[in-house]
Image (cartoon, rainbow, N blue to C red; front, side):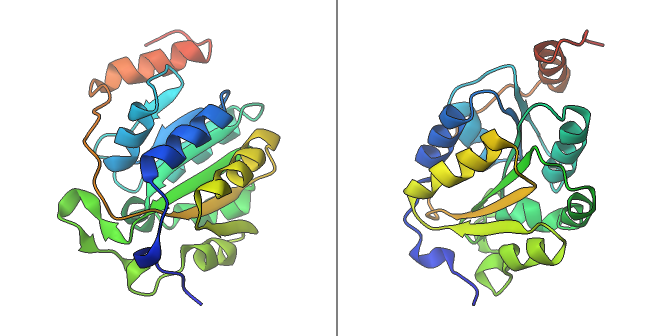
Length: 198
């Protein structure tokens, strides 16, 4: 049975802030738009990699990072619309099975960046079932704020791959805009990993 975001009670900003605080060593990749705003609002840090305009790319970038940095937890925080656009990446994640990759889909059932049109998840698409079909066995829904602890535990233990579909309220908190200079974000992230900028 497909769950619905219409009865969601999770506040996106509170959930993301608690999650990041609970996984302090994570390398964080954000989907475009609201997911980036939520992560930035929780506190900017060099190990945050914000995507601007690369809709559908967050999970793919997270996969590459997880494979390149297998000893570090990698946390992708994205939205339902962004993940739907990059849904094929879940197939590659299912094949590669990176233990250190956790994908958090903040699902409000809407395309928040283009006018709050209903997304596929509010029209019948079950991202948990999709992820499981692609081979991500640890895919589950989160319907209450208390579920943050289960997501954090999996991320910290690197027992992935994991996909958590988090049903959030369909509100739009004030925008908290992270740095928009892609070269700066890239170089800062590389330096945080001990690599020289280029």
